[in-house]
Image 1 (cartoon, rainbow, N blue to C red):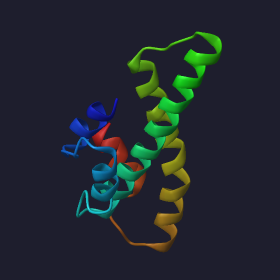
Image 2: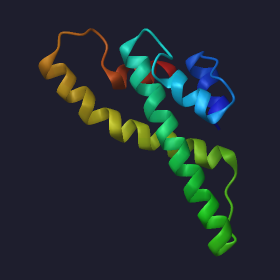
Image 3: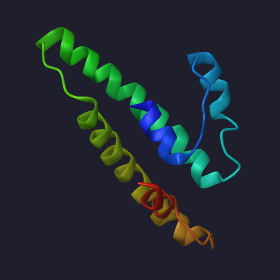
Length: 104
């Protein structure tokens, strides 16, 4: 799931968890991409935890593509209000949501 998103954003994160946490701080020079990478990481950690609980407690599992779609929906829902606020307070040409939609 992480590889899917990183390949679309065209970044190469480290494989270790702690190294990845350090990398997140400076993963891109573009502030829109930087925020998107951080949000994707957070959403993936949450969705994998949620998937793990579903498998343990109800013996139900979903394919990775279903989790990817849920992450995409979660990120879109988070970026929409941030982008609306960004248009009001900034003259930036591309909003967070605009950047997201150009990638995915």
